[in-house]
Length: 478
Ligand code: SAM
Image 1 (cartoon, rainbow, N blue to C red):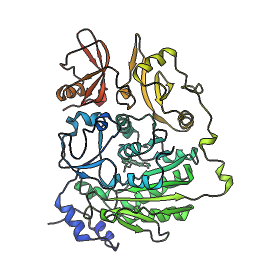
Image 2 (image 1 turned 180 degrees about the vertical axis):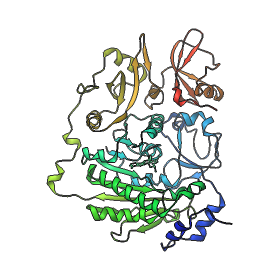
Image 3 (image 1 turned 30 degrees about the vertical axis):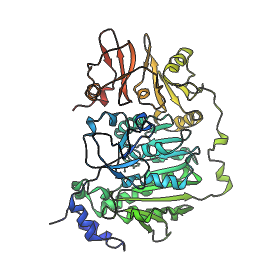
Image 4 (image 1 turned 180 degrees about the horizontal axis):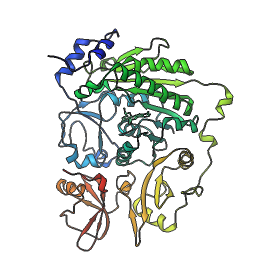
């Protein structure tokens, strides 16, 4: 049988000693498909231990753990995620297993209990951002950036579903990050690439492979790295990854970095039983980690960690650190869009959110909740970047009463005693379609719609009817 794999790709990979071209061809021709998810451990369903390997949540059968990631599982088959309300509640994210190695790298390089500032530069649709959110502390900051405007909504949606109050989304070109030198402790660059690692999932994509494409990707990757190098703190870590097999997009990129900047390679000691291949670049001998589908349960992936070395003392003054940030009170009063919130807003918010856990800020006509201490970061980020999301939008004042925001329904900090309608799966799906449903209507007012303890969104109950506030652009059509 003729393989759909580009001959040029296979021939270029044969130059690497570890590469087994027969096994590579065979696994691609087998048509085997893997499905994996990682769980949002802060959602109540997980706290209540409904999910676990022993008690698999229908309609899934769990087929074992992804060894290099926390709370991540393979599924026995691919269910209809669209028809699972828990998918829409953000209880889990469907993510390719090899890419979850970011989780292992992050744990290896940082004490995740500390307050960290993390940038996910090429973030849409948000798989790795949700993974990072699950690992970093609540006090840490995650900025998820996406340069392509049309891909920002899906990123924002996925992070909204994840429900944390320490995340920001921006829509900037990598070069704009030069404006905030030394700001981040960790940067993930999950770079745009030729995508050969995903050909088993999408064989048709293989027809677009060419040596010119690989060259083009290599140049773009170099440009992206040069653009963001300055905004990494000294001693900070850069995690570089691709889903390409090509050395030009992986080890050669590490050599480019070492040639341009002062950096150190980081060895990640994965368990030998995982069958991840460790490589070293030609010149700097920088470590890289390669995933081949014939060696492990995952698609093609490459990851490397580089630490930025300290340079001259004079450059250090450019760096932002916790020590030189301005102190803020409960809500910042500076800036055109940033006003302290009113007493009535504070009272209403108290009914939805446990007090004293968050700080609030008015942006345009809405109140947003952020983890304390992130206010000064918000000021800095919004003065330098095009922010599309900051923390969690809580709600806004309507003509008569307060209108809670959809983001609040999905937030992990919404009070558990706030009014809720607990519904069946078929009512939950009706709600997600934007329809009314047949549940008995208790009291009037705002209620979250809950399926298996997970909030999906808001309804407002009136005398004999309900208004469905599930956002139009999120509604399911099946
Ligand atoms: N990290 C994402 C995840 O785990 O869900 C996947 C990221 S995907 C491999 C690469 C991303 O880079 C895409 O979202 C793409 O829009 C973005 N991108 C494309 N060209 C870019 C450029 N020139 N600079 C920065 N990002 C770019």
